[in-house]
Length: 56
Image (cartoon, rainbow, N blue to C red; front, side, top):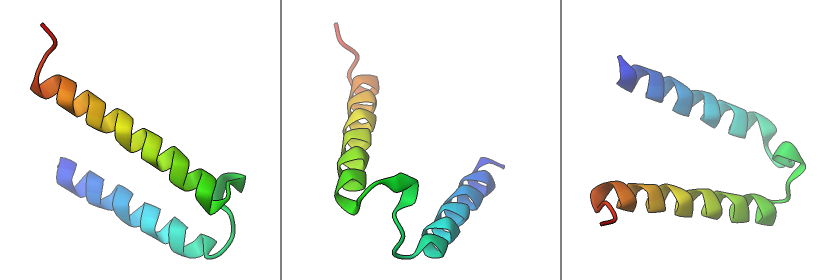
């Protein structure tokens, strides 16, 4: 079920990353992409921690 869907998404992502090679994806430089990714990760972590310990 869901596990299969996640695996499929991961594989698709891997393939597109391979296909792009050294080209910029979405017109972003590697640094800009790294920055955006770190921001996304921080938001995810924030959401996860909020779920774990709800604000009183």
